[in-house]
Length: 222
Image 1 (tube, rainbow, N blue to C red):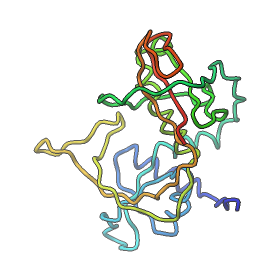
Image 2 (cartoon, rainbow, N blue to C red):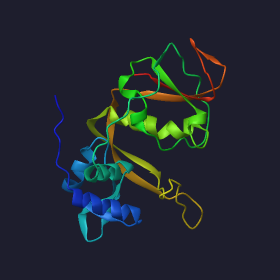
Image 3 (tube, rainbow, N blue to C red):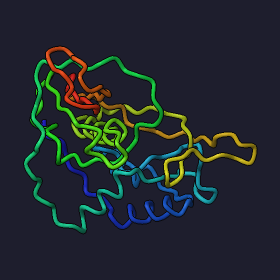
Image 4 (cartoon, rainbow, N blue to C red):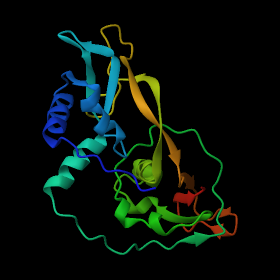
């Protein structure tokens, strides 16, 4: 059954994004929040633990990264994606996961062949292709966004307590140096496609494939 597209209040979303960017609280009612929460991916997060002191039917809301992307898409023409230059690999096996630091980073999903990949296929991106010389960090957020792109909401929601982050994605600290946390309500997702990324080393054999250089191997596992 096709999903029903819910009309979004762009003006309200712009206000939420502006408040989030400015580090201010913005309160919304459940009917106002629902269309944004039902969007895939969700455009806002609601903290039911913080209520409007003047209206207890409204809770604090903050925009997600997808909200700004959505607003940008409303004001810019859709660019035609260029054909991917990356070859799809068969027979490669992802190496074991290694403990690393932050793997967040910007990516350009239209460059990569996610849409054409079957379960068990993968593609390689060399460290040398990226400004900071680390394909794993550069493509981490791209892989996450692709997993969300092919996910669908189950209709269930869960409460998650997490660190509050600033515009640079760093955890905010209180006066005592402890991380500031917030409780948000997030939809439970079913992943129809799952992509996983691992760092690989030049010359090492992974399954039937040998890495041509240091970089990252991205595989579709579901």
